[in-house]
Length: 161
Image (cartoon, helix red, strand yellow):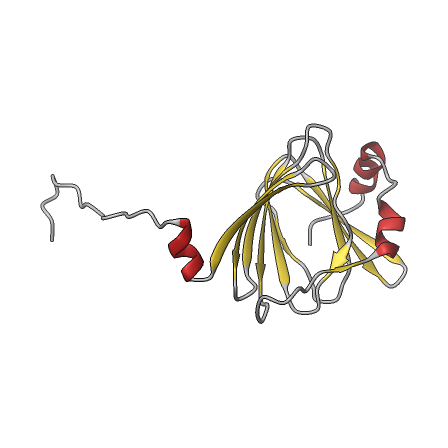
């Protein structure tokens, strides 16, 4: 056991992009159409981590669902309105910093982020690199026209579940 006055040292070695890629992990960063910045770490097993930074104006993402992958949303800064389409109803969840929510398979969902919000999304439960993202025009038609003031009014009745 080290002497209490001595600090234990840990050897930390940076991993190059090339070595990470050999282990099946790559990075991919994007500026989305809605102005969001997305910083991704993606693995060949279908899992991923995404840091999402909303634009100064905020906005809706694109409605979608997954057949296999689950997405866990973690709110860091600001808030998020999370919607799901269950048959012809839209279910709303208003989320604040520290809230966490995991999607359900084959349930269309979408997210509205106000200006400068920051969230983290962990994609997990997949079975490989194949694409498991399916758009949902119905949920887009039900939500993407709703402005932030109306979202906040809806949020007064919604809870995080």
